[in-house]
Length: 231
Length: 231
Image (tube, rainbow over all chains, first blue to last red; front, side, top):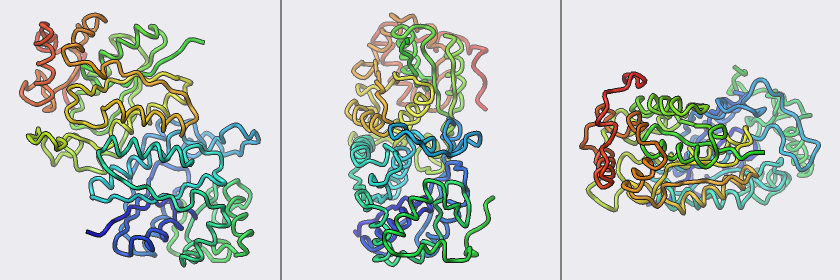
């Protein structure tokens, strides 16, 4: 039986690149994409994910998670808190949603468990990781041990971007033929399209494209019809 | 500053005993209770949790998780699947919800993170554990490492019943003065009150009380007014 993979797709640049990586690694008919609707402030992320999955023609599921918004206290799901960058290197930014990637991977495991899928692909990177400790390799390796013990499974987690800089991520996207799809992705913390260009997420993305010497298709393209307005 | 604890309260016998354990260990005003509404088949569990928390007068939060039901495929959240015991010792029962305890503990961590609570208390037991691998000590220890890495926290997880038999759990409840509260708890997989007495959960509970030589207050009492009918 062929090996099958589940790619976690947020609709952003990194997870889209990883979806293309998964298609190359596992083959066109052996990849599914999974997106989480966790009541994130910017619904446009979901539309981007939907558009990217449609572009590459993979089965795509959006799973709801209503718990983070119920817990509150972070800028990504709490309408009362504005995203801000932290000027204190030791402090976590207020866009940190405690446990987000831990929960995403555990639900991805539960979803894959039901389908007999044994490979998980995700876009976390510890280089340029915005200060999120749940993107680090040792966190994710430890979590996968817990998931495999807790579900009696042998999932393999692939994080192709873990040690890549943003420049290397852009170059990988180019090599994988994923560059055009970047016009569909969403990165901006302000939820704007065209992107604001000044939030930490926009600046990190711009840095990668600039250093790679490639212009960002998101900035060059008109807004594709496939992307819906923010609801 | 006094140490504070968050007790995960399902409304069952074990988590209720653990809530009493937490009250003794951390003090009356230093414990909160957290229950998950994960669209479980039997809403009576939530009413039991509410009643137990009210009885001991601790702050109580019910957090929603709509994801397990969206994933489906298990007897506890999928209305199309009836709970059945497995006669094959090596197979997991169909009441196994993949990732349930992993997700519960991660969300409990996220909830405690926001409140500055550093101790988590939970009722998992690897003795008599119904075949659930996410109740085992090594699973939970590994998960707590992942949570502490991923949230940059130093949570301590307390599982007072991890190595207790059901008999020992009943005797502990007696020692902690928790026996009367057992009349409020819910265990039956069939969602019945009075309990069916024949499902695996009922039989395990009955075994514990029988071996402890104590009659189960749940069977002796009329249905308390505080427990609402199943909605």
